[in-house]
Length: 169
Image (cartoon, rainbow, N blue to C red):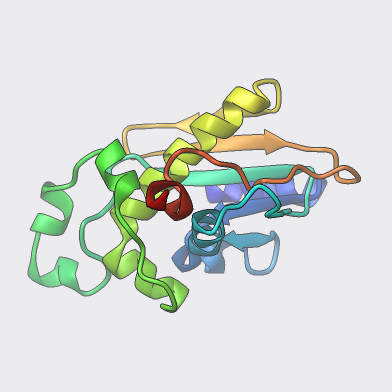
């Protein structure tokens, strides 16, 4: 999947919005925007917040059933794979600890990040249905393609119902 997107990225200006652990796949050929950074920016949403991502196409990767554990834990425990649950409202409600390294979010908050990303794109799609489409989908993950005018970029900061600020009021 990444190789197909990289070929597209070299033909157009685009970004892959995905976890940091996928960065090596696009390092020499594509552009990467960190998913944890994006979601953390959404957590601090206000009506004046601006989040712009360069590129004519943005490809948002979302794991449908996020891995429970990350990295070395799979060598010890198979449960990280077998007890996965699909992204959900419950996952999107989970609070994210601030100030961690991006890779640490995939160890501790992978389920929440993917749930939040899923509900973010559903809300964004209601605003711009002609510019958001499913690019690829299988049983494990889904990739959304978001088209934008490079010279009039979208503000990706939206109130999608799961922003921390929203729950505090």
